[in-house]
Length: 69
Ligand code: FES
Image (cartoon, rainbow, N blue to C red; front, top):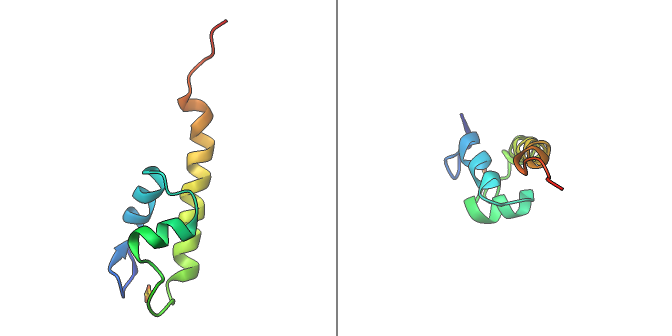
C-alpha cells in the first residue's frame, strides 16, 4: 500500500527500513523521504514505523537464542 503519495513510499518500504536498522521515525524519514513534502502521510507513516519498531523489539529477545551456561 502506498503511504506517501508525494514520494511514492509504501508501507513495505517503511518496514524494510526498520528491519535494516532505522530505529526512529526521523531516521526512516531521512532514509526514504517519507513525510518530507506535503506531510499528509505523517501520522499514518509514523504509526506504521512505530508498529514495525515495536515488532522488532518483541522479536529481538527471541532472535538471540538461548543462553548457555
Ligand atoms: S503524501 Fe507524504 S509527503 Fe505528501
